[in-house]
Length: 142
Image (cartoon, rainbow, N blue to C red):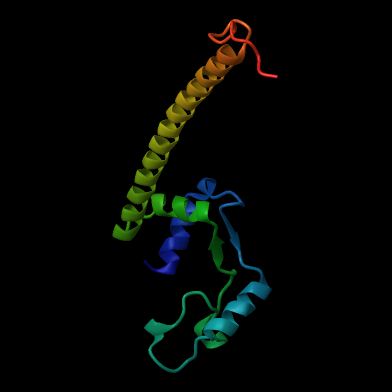
């Protein structure tokens, strides 16, 4: 997917992306990306230029710093995009949440059962060592 199509989809769905889902890179972060990936040049295949770094003025340059997406933003992005990869990612997210809910439910049931067993065990121990237990008539050892 082209960067401009992605940016357009984000703008059309701006309410789905609060500040903790995405944010523009700072000039320092952008410079760091340029340092790591290099800037695009006027020579070579223009299709191979990085979509993240700004180009030289002859190419027009960027008007805004690129957007960075948090984990939540990436999931939301997958829900609004209509590419095969985005749809597959959305399906995987839904499946992961269903598995998580199943896991939590199963563990909640297990925790409830363990609490009941723990109560039964302690009640049994209290009965066995208590004054009304089966060994109440036996003399205590010195």
